[in-house]
Image (cartoon, rainbow, N blue to C red):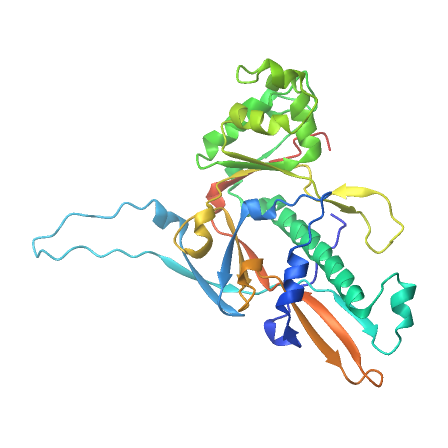
Length: 346
């Protein structure tokens, strides 16, 4: 994907200035009605109290290991090892800055702002948009990486073959229901699916879906693709289906570019998401987002805004607002995720 996913490798020691809870609230409260994000539906958020360090997790095999519960003649019970593994967390940051010369007030008016505060708020909203789309892109990259799954739980579709293997937009020769059922045989933990909007449109029109006994006559007549989100849950037998709507320009270095690209690529993700795993290192879920929890703004999922003034620039200095998120996406349990590559004709 050509969209920039953000910068990495900077720690909390690189932050400068005071954390502004009011600006953080303003940025976090920004809602873009044309962009729907789904990363938090797949990556369970897990706050960390330290900037860098380690988190603990149980090895996958210990979740299925049957311990010896018989009591020996001594009456002393057997001990078990949880197989704990410590994993280093290299935090990630995504940041932008709003920079202006506090002396030259004319630029406020030239840029359409009525005051210094108005300009600050506009910049913070812009940072909120940039951070959220960057977060979505980073999640999509992790999901599309076949190394994050067991080999038997990755399926690549083709132009010909058995219906279970054929691109879904070949309506006459493919069978999405059979494909999903085959994936569920390899991964019994699936409770969630995620795919992009073009995939939803194909499934809405697919004869195998329309012919399913769980699809009502009213659903078949509906032109609204969102009706089919609930319908597809019944067809595929999953609790949750999330549709990635986010798009970005294919070349962010050219502001005039008009070609948009789906952030969530030509893939279908299936896996287990346990929302209660956020603060419990022993509770399995496919992936987590570990983030540095800043005092005062914990409810914002790791986002915060700092403000500082550079006195070396101009007689009154230049004021900066920077938006941050120190984080690390981590695939917690490979065996609980599955991936269909190229469900539609590439």
